[in-house]
Length: 258
Ligand code: OOG
Ligand code: MG
Image (tube, rainbow, N blue to C red; front, side):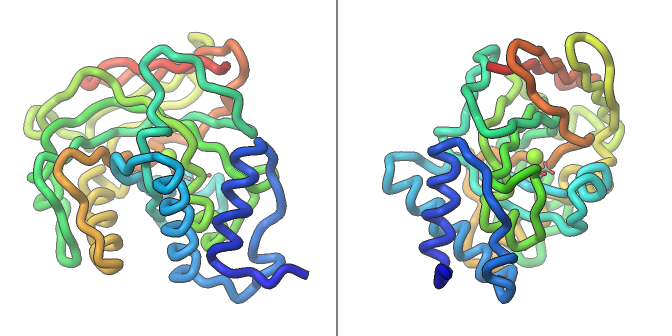
């Protein structure tokens, strides 16, 4: 039986990502794994990516909408790391992954640093330089995306790839609660939501990230990207299929399964 440590957890999850295979949940082998230890494993995983030449470009939130929480059976928002290795150029097909799913997200580019605790939604929004449409491609390293809260935290919140739309809008130019998005697969609408789906306002998700990371001694830096979380449930990304997210003011992003 494996004696699990945060180092071993990070090594195992990176090996699954590299070999493109899923596997069992950590909590089945390590029932005592708690949230703080899971974030330690996530940080070790990031350190290994940095040692391999990747660079941090921002953070992601996960499970910030009811649609996502209910589908995944985990009812608490989480954060994860974004690196330059996860950036997908607009229009590029997604490389082969384990079992990719795609979800539309509102993306912030920070113009000022943010450090919690004590950050509110309005203070968070004031640090945003521009707002973009985006897609996140998630790819759990667990079989059938079945995980508990500490499992998914250790797995860097299922992060795999992401796309950021080219059109940047100043946060003062629109009401993000009312920003509507229609998600389509092969041109057929499959879901829709407005920005209010994410914590009532996506800036609340940003504040949550600043406060959670602040408690771990981490500042959100100017220039970082923040993915505020799937507005709708994610859809499977199948080879050669195109998924589109049309936002009312932020423009349209599309992605193609590789
Ligand atoms: C966990 C990651 C969730 C989001 O935007 O809600 C997430 C998962 O669903 O596998 O990225
Ligand atoms: Mg997401």
